[in-house]
Image (cartoon, rainbow, N blue to C red; front, side, top):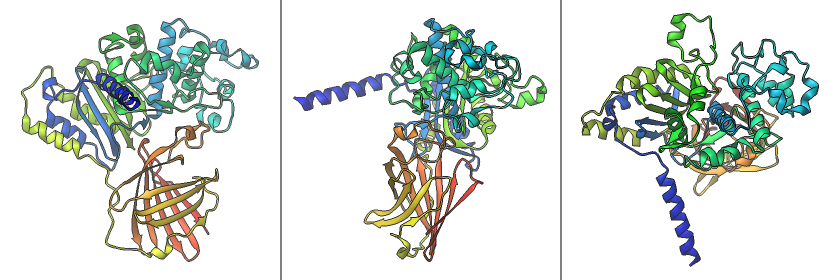
Length: 507
């Protein structure tokens, strides 16, 4: 009986989740050529863009979707600054519930920092100034505060304001953190808890996690992890004036206010420069304005929700990209012209070709040559010198199933990562992976276990190259393991900084 009840609950959860997914359609039925979509995706050159997922919506329906294996639909993905648009949404709910107003002074929420009230312009700073990235700082204070100071609120409020708030744009991630802190002050709940009944549940979004500081405040400007379709749901809600599945989720007034231009990023830019850039079209409340009448949520290394009201379309991309403007150029050059005004005749051959193409997207592991290296090098544990990755020991073991990297870390834990030959070996571990904010004390360890895909190849008789890909993030490590007598030379590269080689010695 208990087993039957469990199965019934499992069915109901699965059925509810299915019911809340976005409807699917074919490209041609929504006025888009299948062949144009294929050409659009093919336009992303792997030298500059490593795509992880793409989802295209038209008229409220998903018409195309793909994940590059080992990335998959059920996996979350670190979204970096796309987080800012989710934070803006929380502010919108708080405004509609009269918990706060965008004209409220920032200091009014933090009487415990009254000793800073005489700081230049600080009394004038409003929530709107935070939303529009117009605090008035001369340089963004993020790194100097979140890495070096335990109290991020005080660190932000202490940073000198050089220009009158509201007059000068400067991208400011710590300003978004302050929005998170204000929402928590005004509502008594963290961002993630506040959004759960208001946004996540109505949109059928589950399993969200979000980094947080030592005070339990979600980081706001970065740190949310959601699935590709969750991104699409947020995009669809904003595209439809705050409605999802016909229900008003967030007020239409907030959507209009949040997505319109409030400030110019570069008022002096020439028209030619404006015509070629999606970074100087104006900024809203944690949303970027784009060319072609669009607006977007945008995250480092190529995470996007691009909303196109004139075409009734949404494009979601997760990736690791080194050319963000080119990411958007591909949308305007190859997809935008294909978004026709009405249904077009079915083209079965093109549609089948697109589906075959989408189903075969993958990130190939490093191919192995016939070379078999010196396996006597395996099974030796090397103690490592101090290094930026905070590895303390390294060993590669051979098992019946293949190779396993065994990595010790400064917390005195050891992590096992299986490695496939000519394939990805999937596993989970509790070691924090490659991440440009890895050094920030934001409780990353609480999100373990982390999903990993591992691969190895012999480069020569004494050298093994490992790829350790964290598949709920944009990033991976490329590590070269070379033994010379009783010495180990490790060379590590964070994929987001491919030119910054990290040399690590071991004995």
